Length: 406
Ligand code: MLT
Image 1 (spheres, rainbow, N blue to C red):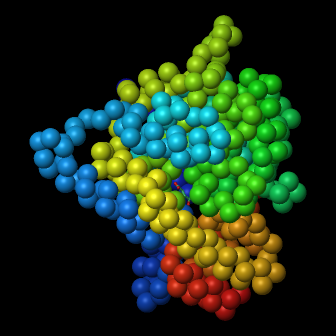
Image 2 (cartoon, helix red, strand yellow):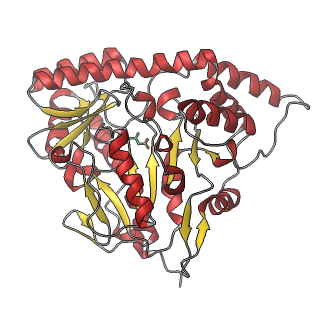
Image 3 (tube, rainbow, N blue to C red):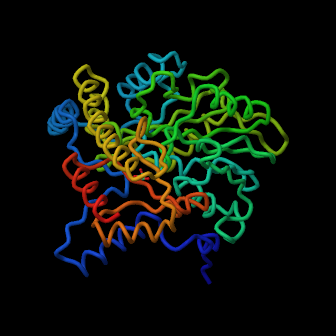
């Protein structure tokens, strides 16, 4: 008799964004005349930057010739892209990362979900609340938690991110081994200063822990004093893995390209207490389970670092940040407390009512889709998240409708 992995039965209903999509589809079926504006899932709406499109086309043309054809590429990514990433995203900011520490992949979602496979099942995991659900759900699937009770899984150390700590969690009061952090944060849009992140790096070094740092939204940082990478901090190479994505800066949500940085100094321990480097383990996993991102997509990603690409990406990010400014302005006018939007495409709003009630109110009264904060964890109850990823015209209309509904 085939038995299932019963840890899957502990998961809450469906994945948050599928759940929302189903509710919106039902609403549209019941109200076909209503025009719905989506400010829910963080999916970009603007087309790919021209520099990427040109490089993409050129690479597809190469693939039509005997001499330019590419079959299986290196699982870790082509050297041209790994070099461009290392030089532009890290070395240019004083962060010492080399090309062979970069693993190109098809998404930060997959990488942040898969990385936990490298660590033992008795790893003590610290996860912020609210949180991007992938970090938590993948640990549930792996069997690192007990059951779900009163809004939380047993066995996880939750790091509350609330108004009281400016949505930057405090260090845990009980021992942990693996720490998930995300800045600029999804879902709250909050940011962490160098001093705040240094505290986490120092904690990890003192406690033989490892930080999984999701920096998928770093391109939205406008404040020059904020770190873009955890490797800007002293000692981080020993204790941090960083995840990046081309989805939100260059509009690759449908094109798929991302990368993970695993410095060679990053260590975990075996049961005898001996140090084991994480880099060869992730390399082994990547080569076994992943066959690389396609050549044309990697060429398109490389173009992000060309002179034209850099300028076009700045425009794209600026466009969404302008939307975020508008959302923050209107929300502020209503007297709602909010965070984010200044260095992030997300605005986290304290709605003074149940999150799903607020979701329903916005959908039914204004045809605007948000993400209910409760879907990101217990601390998200009472909040909603609005995303700035839409056209300026749609955001303007959405804000006008919300103004009327409220
Ligand atoms: C979100 O809305 O939180 C993101 O789009 C999720 C993702 O990037 O997978």
